[in-house]
Image (cartoon, rainbow, N blue to C red; front, side, top):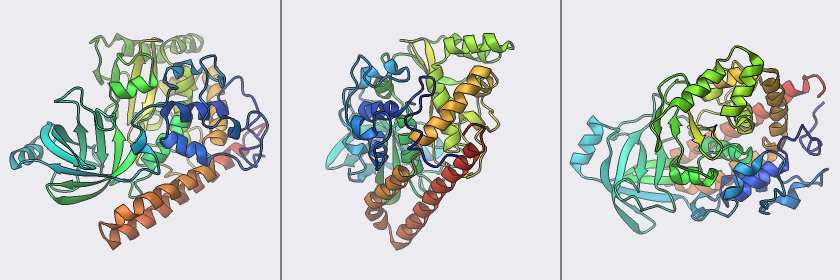
Length: 435
């Protein structure tokens, strides 16, 4: 029986990630959500092995002080990243005042994805000539005259300019997550599991004096983002698009126009011989990170992600290792199915190809169990929900008393979903042979 994640801590699973993954995640990204969730996950009593109290805040050496999984892909980013101040749970809610002319508004009405120039004021600092366009898919897109989701590109027209170190950021309207929290929480969980994920904070937004309300601010997946997670940020980055897989034509950016790398990954995934398939996939894919990516999408029940729906993901071809890395995108519909199976229907081609191999199935099972105990720490997650609620509520209440009440209710709902999903996963794990 599984009574708690604490007793599991000292168990070694074939060299897979343990507390070091969490320590590295906190060190890689500085005082952002990975560190926040990590701080809340410190157990209340000493456990076997190097306790989390012993490693929090310590920076791993290049000799691999905490190296349990293959963490050399992260060691280049152990120096604390500047400009992380806006991502702390203690940081104030940002306030964006966006101004644009009527011709630009009309342009966004007719061509919402085409950038227009705007002036933006935040914290008393004025940025002119900022590229702005609308974003969002079927569920979240709203026109400019409602509550639009926006992309602000500070570096598009002026390449060297940044906003708190960000070349580009997204202001998500969070219409599918009225708690405004799951992007932050799940991003922290993926980061703690060693999977790249954008940093997140929150903002109030006005457009030409019109109060648009409360928003989720998400870091753009730019070269700056890639540089924090990889030794070489010049590789090709693929956008998974809407319900597309690696066999489809995916939009991409990169110095090379050659997409044979993606075709090779698709070919390896379709290899009929399971032994050869595993060999080819380990050559094309950062397998350690992908296994964690798979397990995390299932744990948080990201039903609209790559693993279960071929949606909401990015892929980076890391030139320094000649391997692909998947990471999540658009995590606003999470924890919905408390009893969602821990071995769901793997719709994504790469995920399905891996789970069909004996090696892949074994690693997935082990990693799922481990990340449940080491990342899905219930107390830490609910503490993080409460911290975000305490930080954000005053800003939401500025919109009106109804907005504040709706926000309170939504936070209670997502808190309950996190708890019920944790119980649902634990129940399934308890039924596993040998657990």
